Length: 256
Length: 285
Image (cartoon, rainbow over all chains, first blue to last red; front, side):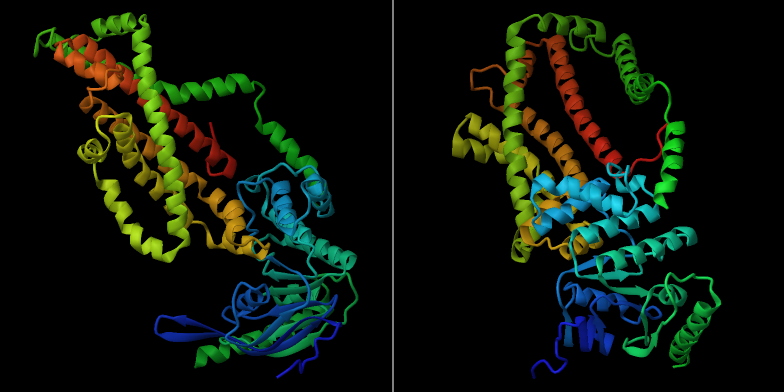
């Protein structure tokens, strides 16, 4: 079996019949069952699914932290991962966290600090470089996490419900921020969320995942002009349809 | 945007800070100190009351004041400092070896599953074993030498230090490890940049406990090994007993007590500094 899904230059990542199972005591839990999709270079794709749809597992496999049980997941280029909790190292300052990413990438010590400050400036955290994570708000922590991901010089950014724990205003601001950085840096982003509005706000394309096990149930192309507003009626209509589909997925499960 | 929020944040921070940082830190030191001083005063009072009760003669149990006078007299003699110096050198040497060996062993146990299964339970056994139980063997192997004393100190301190570091490594938040790996840290680099720094608070806890064991072990060893003709704290203690010199005996006990507390409070300060750095301290008064 060779590259049937030709790994053309156009694609930043491809997932082919990806199945991931975990053993849970005696029984085998299927997190993903034959998920197949591709993401084009520079595309912003959102994945929505109820809990248990294997969204996080998908990202872990793409980031190389979990192994597929069957099928393939392929990323072209470097990957950076952003988690729901910012997962900053608590003993390092904001700049220190970014510098560590630079160091692990092999950036020489002489330019690390300058680069870290520059990246923190890009996420509007100038002046907060020496703060430690516990001295930053939730939104600011996620900005540092974003700067750290940028420091990894990734081609593909995998985001696991990154703004799920934030208040509405911080989240709104970070949506703008992320959209701006995405445009500037021509990143490919795979953004996992359980919030349909957020998915439609950000994504060129939204993939709805089934629950337990997860696979792609529906694909929605979002053709609204950017920047979009979370409150626009057009966005609400599309998000509503996705939410209905999600409810259907969950309802189906509940009846069984 | 954060840029717009920044002035407000620094303003609220400015409001939070008091105008007299020096006075504030002095107040903090005092608030940490007075309960300890109070306890010391209480102890001395009880001691004095026992002496006054006439339970034992003044020559067997002298009061606090004669002991303090005796200690002040001792502190005018260079020999006394030499004895304390030797004891401190011994504990520092043994403790350093214990810390180095324990760190290596703990990392090996954490890294290698077989080592964990082999040595893991052994560590618990060693920890509960009084290190002075090693002394007869140490004397057989190394005679009544410095080596025998060092061995007892190492066997006393090392298990506690290793156990502290190991539990620190075992309890590193899995998310931090995933972050490290996602940033491309693997093997040794993951240890250096993520796991060991994350294990630091537990390691300091282990070091602190290890110090207490080292100090205790050394005192036992010095009481037993009087043969070396150098003067040490343990040796002074033993000869004070032989001479029925209760004042001298208690004066040396005070020294042992003070050294123990002083080193322990250094570890306490280290622990507080780390927790402040990590944001694990509550709002301070």
